[in-house]
Length: 119
Picture (tube, rainbow, N blue to C red):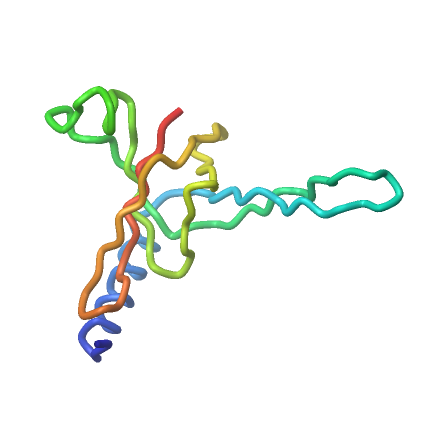
């Protein structure tokens, strides 16, 4: 159930991530469209979406070697862009693969996404 409080928390999260966040881009793979003349699928260009986010390293005590590995990062992003597992995250000019997505929810409204990424 959406409430005024949860909507306000979305705004607070976005404001803080905009003020204190860094440059992080979400790279979404382009669609594959069928080309009848060529007789094959043609990959469309990737889409780059700027995120209001902050990347932070994973706490060393949480590393278990399988689901969380040394060197993983958590990108804490606002609710405005819905990430998917097929996306890539661009940090400092390098693309990182998305290996986990956690929604932070208040009263049925997503306030933020914690995106676990790996090189």
